[in-house]
Every structure is written in C-alpha cells, then in structure tokens.
Image (spheres, rainbow, N blue to C red):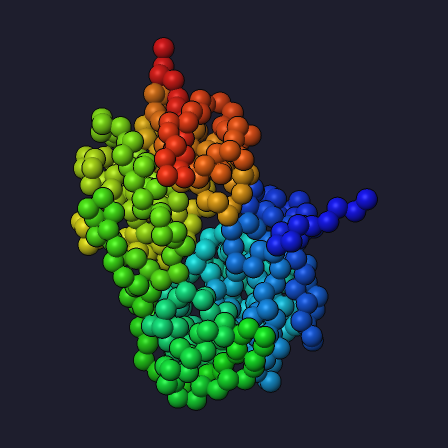
Length: 401
C-alpha cells in the first residue's frame, strides 16, 4: 500500500549523488530539477540549510523567463545559492563567462560541485559578500534573486551596484518588496515580469557612483547580549528568543580562564565576543560560514575593541589542529539536520584537549530526536540542563592519567 505524505510535509527528494556526498558531506540533501522554457533541463544536488532546498523557487524560474533579449558575453549571478539561476544561464550560453557569487560557503560549495558535475567550464564560483572585491570587473548582465529580509538600503546597493559594473540588472523580488523597489526612484527602472508571488525588474546600464565595499548597507539595528552592544545585520536568521537561550550557555561557562576557546556557528559575534570580554587573557576563535555574519562579527569586535580571530569555514574543525582547545562552545542549527549535528559534535570532541569540554546549545526537540544517534563516538556526552525549551549538552575529554 502506498504511503501518503502528511499534509504540509516536505516531499522526499531523490538521493544526492555520491559526488555530492563527497563535496558537501552531511549537508548533502538530495537532487532537484531546474527546468525553465528555453533552457537545458539540469539535475542539481542541493544541501540542507540553504534557500529553496526542496525545489527551485518560483522567483528564479520567473527571472529565467524575463532575461534580456541579446545573448550575454559575461554574467554575474549574485547570491547564486546552489546554482539554480546561474547554471541554466551558463548551460544555455556556453560561450558566456559566468561568475556565481554567494556569501554562504555552503552555497558556494554546492554551486561549484554542480557546475563541475554538469561540465560547465564557463562557470567560476566564488565566495563573496555583495559586490565586495568585484570593483575591477565588468559584466553584461547582473542577475539577482533579492533576499526577502535584506532591507531597503541593501536593495538599492544590489541594483545600483550592478550598474557600477557596467551591467544591465535583472532582479526578482517577492511581491511585498515591489513597493520598496519602486520607491527607490531609480532612473530607468522598469517592471518586466509578474508572477503569482514575484515581480521582475530591469535596470539598464548607467554610470553610477557606488561604494561596492560598503557593509553599512546591511546594518539593521543594535541589540545587546550580556552587556555588549552589537550591530545586527538585516537577513540574520535569528529567533526572537535566541539571546535568552544563548544566555543559558553563557551562564554555564567554566570559572577558570581557558588559554584558548572556539565558538562555532558564531553568527555576528554574541558568543565569541562574550567569551573574550569574560576571559580577557584567552585566545578566542570564532567559526562561521556566512560572510555577512563574519563581516558584522569583525565590525562588532572592532567597535568593542575585543580581539577575536574569525574562521570562515563550513565545519568547526576545518583547518584546525586536533586537541587544541580546552573550551569549545556553540549551538546546533535546527534546519541543518541530525547528520550535520553529528559532524559538528564529532568535530568538537576532536578539538578538545585532555580535560577539555564543549558546551553545545540545542533545542529540547533536537535533543529528543537526534540523540544519542548524533553523539560523538569517542567522547562522553551528557545533558547538563534543560531550561525554557533549550538543552545544554556537554562533551568532555578525560584528563591524561
């Protein structure tokens, strides 16, 4: 008898390829099909914890139907994700130079893997925040699926920044953002496409003066954690109760000052900066995969005059020597899944010195559903406490005899 899918449940995807599992590790989720009229039909491996990982979104497909008429010689896909927009363009126009950029290192890894698997030799995938480090380049087209929560100043930056690179800009936005785009008053802006929930706008090439390295355009507001004032970016994925739960971890930190500490999934800096303010003599490293978060982490560290080293990597232990940290702290992502959580906890265990400990914040739901299967194999895992829907886990290494 065929099993019925529960209403609202995500459809199962075809399994990721073996090459995707090698490239993306536990993030590999499955495969989706990118199919738009006039474009080659492409099979793309998708990871957990990125935009549109259950299927190519409507906005991307709408934008592919409303591109400029003349074939391009060069294209920039800004915020490329796993390649659902830029790779069909590259496949249709194989002589065009196609640069795909994303601020999320996971998206970069997925897009690069997909480009290689499809044999698209005209594609280069780069990590980058907006147009940072692109000032010397020129493109015929800049394509962008604008994030829903990025803020008006950043939307202007995304549109006019493309002009500064000599390009015609085509951008798709959700319908709620269309008044914001129109309200910018950009000369030459035209709406060229309308879908069920998205609109496509065209902005012709024009001479404009834009600071392409300006990170201020992403600034949303200021918030406070443990007495530290932090600048917070738009588009930061943050539950309103996040700091209240993070305080559970902060209250459980050891009294003795560790010589070194690592904070993984550091976001824009609350936990690593708290570590440095509490343990001033400690060498603090912060790991994060999102370049918007790391930009604001560095910004907050400078403002607070707290010396924290930033590691832009996918996993906590990437690029680090094992057994080098008496203290590791961080939190599990609910959207990344149990396999990623298992890898992160295994990484934490491997980084600990003899007698060291890792304090990891999880939700009670994650604790119930993911443990003990996700527990590290060669280190002790205990539940320290449950409070306000949060579970605090402790991984420990025994002291040398």
